[in-house]
Image 1 (tube, rainbow, N blue to C red):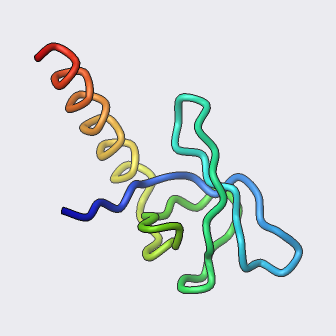
Image 2: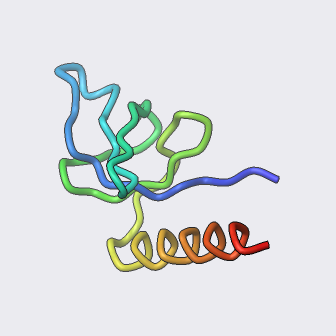
Image 3: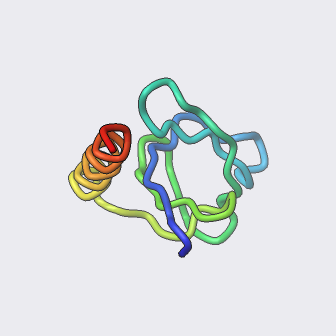
Length: 77
């Protein structure tokens, strides 16, 4: 199974090919953004290090909430 994780663009490099993406909880990673047109503050889905789609903020936050719930549930088992 492959997952794309939503995150927020918090910075772009000078070439606008790479962005720092905030996934919440203090997790920041670099992602290649050459496949989509992004701006600071946009939310994107990232798969295998590539931003593959720009999404609405509410959709990103709801998806992150569901991921946290799944991880919490997994920790209980």
